[in-house]
Image 1 (cartoon, rainbow, N blue to C red):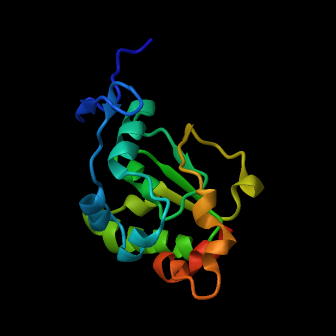
Image 2: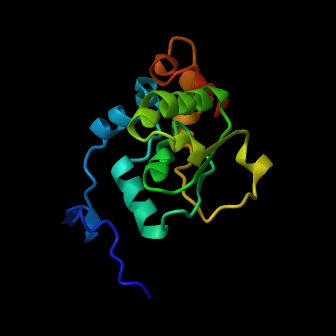
Amino acid sequence: MSDKKFAPEYPRRLDTETGLQDLVDFGSDVNLRKRLFIEESMKHPAKANLNMLGSVISYVSEPDERITDIMAGTGSILIAALAGRPVTLIEISSHYCEWITRSLEEKLEPIAPGISSQVMLINNACQRVLPIPTNHIIFSPPYAHIMAKKLFSEGDISKDIYGEGLTEYS
């Protein structure tokens, strides 16, 4: 058994409502997300906290081990490539694949030239392409209550807030 501690750089707290101890407080990732991803990605309703995601990546993997996100959304898992892990992203929405590509080109390549060579983006449903070679699968699944078609009823502003690409999930 490893002595490795999960997210040692973040403060711990007690949840007084549930009594759960040692909860990790990852804090806001808004500034980091704005630095690493295009502005449109802020609209996606199911973004994993980048601080938490970075901690998970460090805890479960070593450099050069492939990380795969089978429901990539806006591409948050790209931070694994910044940490020296090759990355595979599988995303059903061509809309979000475009956002991932733009984030790579416009935000990440200037920070880490050549990072795109560590990234494989597959525009397809994960059940159509799996299994694929990988060391680890890390993902945040779509949130059914957010993605439901009823959010996009006539006059609902959700489509304006979250973008056209969400309709592909519902």
